[in-house]
Image (cartoon, rainbow, N blue to C red; front, side, top):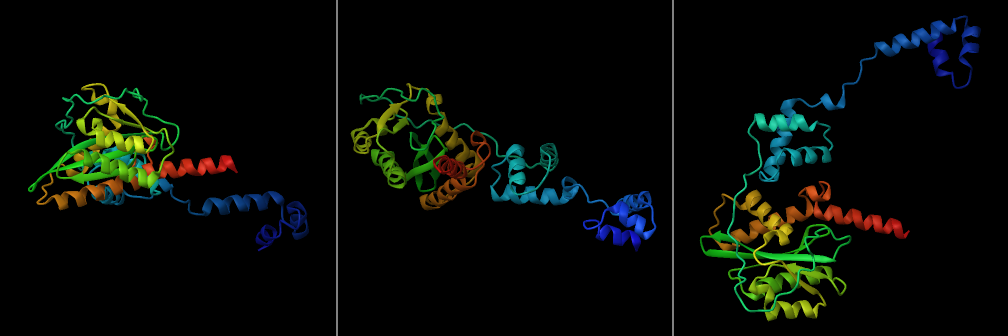
Length: 300
């Protein structure tokens, strides 16, 4: 009781004086406190709170949520982002042990038709895929998706700063309107300042009068890859790989509408939630929001 009184009143009375008044030794008081502290059950390490079974359940849930798109590095980053303190080696081991892996890579056919006599724009990007702000460099490309009704063609526009897909179009053909509609969507959503560089391959759709006229009306500059060099447009090629390997591979679509719905669902996931290693394992929209917040702080 005396020790308890001293502990509760040590903010008002010096410990040595309180011990003297109550007739107890200061060393006895401190020893009592040490024993009491040792007697308390220690809190478990937060990193060891979750059993392998519980962690595996979280991994399986995320794996299903992202439809098998994450390997162990992104899985670990996703778990950490959700507040689970787990080691990356533990995540890798559990995924390997239970056969949980990302979808395998697969090669796809190139759709570029560069056998034409239309004017070719110079390569203004030169593989510099890291602009310093949004709406400085966009890049676009076309891919295809098989359905029981026939091919569905997809054109996308990416802002290279955040790798966000800012415009897209899906049609049953590869005419110029496919890429022009994707550009229009991107412009209406972002309305960039004049001077933006739009980079593409040398396909006839991008070299044609319709698309080049749209670029001119939006005061954008055209840039094109070298002939037959897919690495000059690597970020867009990478986007197609993620879409087809991560989501579409192995699926069969009875109609073009079904394929369109799946693509739109994936694009929403990609922009809002998919962790991007180039961006420090945040989604494109998170990356851009952080940049906007940083600019506001600098201006304040």
